[in-house]
Amino acid sequence: MKKYRITVNGTTYEVEVEELSQDRAAVLQPAQSKASPSPQKDTSRPASPQNQQPAQQPKPVAAPKPKAAAGGQGVKAPMPGTILSIKVKEGDRVSAGDTLLILEAMKMENEINAPCDGTITAVHVSEGVSVNTGDPLINIE
Image (cartoon, rainbow, N blue to C red; front, side, top):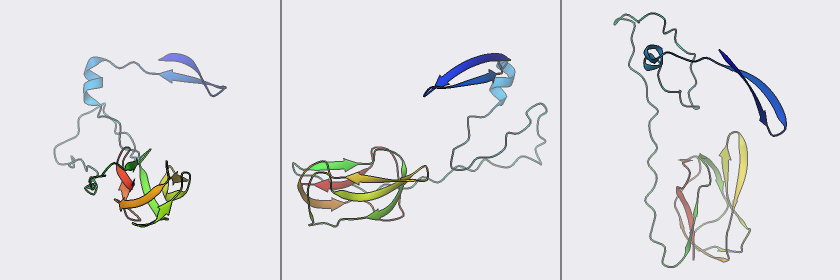
C-alpha cells in the first residue's frame, strides 16, 4: 500500500493505493458504470462455471437523428443526463439566455439556456429521454 495526500478544492485527503501485480490486475474487471454500482467480487479464487452469470451491459439509448440546421445554431447537451422538461416548442421565438429545457444530471436540475436570439427550428429530444454529452437538443435559427 502506498499513501498519498491529495488536496481537492482546498480540502486535504489521505488515500491509500494498493499496487496490483500483473496477474491480479488482469483478473480485475473495468470499473462498473455509475448507473449500476455493484459490490466488488472476491478475485482471490476463480469462480466455478456453474456460478458464473453473463455480465449485464446497460442498454444504449438511441439518440434521435438531428435535422439539418440551415445556418442556425444547435444547442448540444453539456453533460450526460435526463431531460426533465422542455420549455419551448418549434416555432417559438427566444432571446439569448432564455431557458430552453431542464436537464437533470447527478440529481441536480440544470437549466439549458438559449445561446442566441432566434426561432426554434427543431427540438431533438423529449421529456424523460437520456442524453450524452454533445447530443443535439435544440436548433435555433
